[in-house]
Length: 217
Image (tube, rainbow, N blue to C red):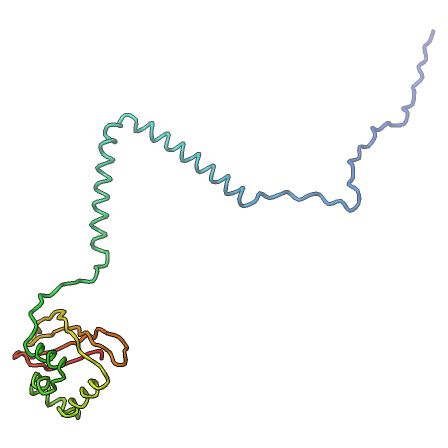
């Protein structure tokens, strides 16, 4: 019996269904990646540095552990040397303060005392005689004579001004000869204005005669 085989023609090709990715709705924008703030970045860097530091200190401590005794002795000595060196450097670079030297005071001059005594009495003749000849000539060149001086003090006396007491502050010798004297005179001001302390400065020559006079009157 002959067997007949019938060749079947291939059927239509079958394809798997196509996969489609979901599409965002119209107008949708994906959210941008959020950048960390500067504070967070700084905090992270700080934590990293601290960890590295602690780790380094741990390794250093382990390495120096066998030499603890030597380190305990060396550290105070090193601190002492550094402190001493810093102090010496500071002493050299620090600005020097203003120098102050107190000169030796000298006793008051005789002609200056005579002038102040005569002034309290309005004795212009004795006051004029306490001046050196050079100072008298200088006053005359300025138009200040004994008579103008007498008129000036007469007006002060009539106004009620009185020289009460003079206090010696001090005096120094000058390198070119002579001396410089400082006084404070208590003065009763006119018209009931009360009392004032007026400073006087006298310059005298080698003979003690007054060569210069200044006051705040």
